[in-house]
Amino acid sequence: MQSVPTVAAFWQGQIADLFQGALPESEVRRFAEALLKLAGGAMPSADLLAEAKAALEQGDAQGAEELFTGLIEQEPENPEAWGGMIRALIALGREAEAKRAVDKVPAKLVDHAEIAGVRSALALVEEGRKAKSQLQQLQARVAADKGDFQARYDLATALNATGEREAAAEALLEIVRRDRAWNDDAARLQLLKFFAAWGFDDPVTIAARRKLSAVLFS
Picture (spheres, one colour):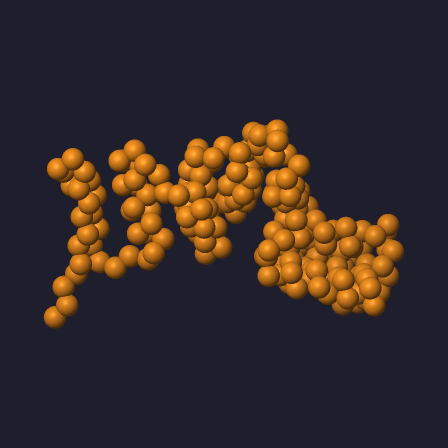
């Protein structure tokens, strides 16, 4: 028979907090962070940033927003903290708050790549909302006419709005393959906006950038 482990933390002779059973690493970290705050300390910023990023990648936007906000309190001029917090707000559908947060970013950070990326992400949310409602219609137009680049371009925006990043990138790459100069290089420029919004370390970004380079320099 196995016993259920109980972990209790004491502060100044009193139980400050406790939990029973096995918890995910992220929950244990939050438990420890709460205790550190109670004791007047804080998690190292690198650990807090890593935890916040992991939470966002795992779909815990609410937890990520709280963690990034805590990091901003520690380091008000940390661009990754600001960018992560704003991305979390976007993921939560709180676009108005995300826009206000962009306006609060310290002046010295406004041109940082991370902040430029979240501005692109916000712009794409608005574009995607319009295109998303026409997704099936756009797919039908592209299927009927491979040379309808405007439909393919709008389809990429709609696909991105639904989270289909690979398909969105491929739609724009196909335009570049067929006609690099179409609409004053619009497909390539939209791809660059996607990359900034997704993050330059995102696996889909990395793969699509390689494909774009292969097309441009072939």
